[in-house]
Length: 121
Image 1 (tube, rainbow, N blue to C red):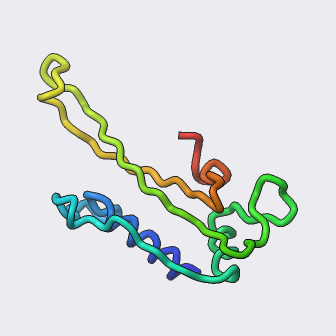
Image 2 (tube, helix red, strand yellow; image 1 turned 180 degrees about the vertical axis):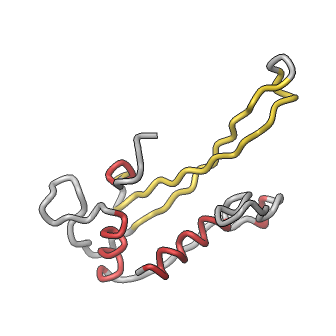
């Protein structure tokens, strides 16, 4: 499972402007950034991914159970620009810091807040 989770991370990284593996730039052009990656698999792949994320439990009512037919996991990458104001708080002189966040959706249900290392933000 670890190689597959690293593959997902590599695809998320390709969609960002800056590499999450180091401080190098991926690309400054949006058209060079990866827009979508699609994988297909069976319940025997989906269940371990849910388990690796910490959201698989057959006994907990809010967490995911064994995947039903046509189940899906979606990793959505969000980009947020934060401005640090310089020179009398003028936006045009501000430094821009880019932050990324990932939302995980399982069969239409946002399960991000159930992942132990993810918070409410």
